[in-house]
Length: 120
Image (cartoon, rainbow, N blue to C red):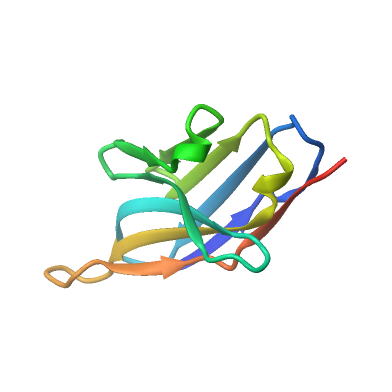
């Protein structure tokens, strides 16, 4: 399973960005899809996750500002980020849980990361 993330960039405080991450490959089944982020000098942290059935989970600091969604037909997960703050500056990584063969465990796959910079 390969993941291609896009949508990062430079945005002013208070602005918005929408990240996308598309999974590709053959014969896979997607489970939970998630976004994580890593700021300089910090550990990677979970931003938001969405289960295959649509249930969502957010880090407390992102609740009300970020929205995670998915399009199962396109194998794509999105992260809508509003009211961005300088402390949201980080590399954002998408991560999916996927099963590539029947009756085998789901495994985690990571995208390459996309940089989000919030600065005036």
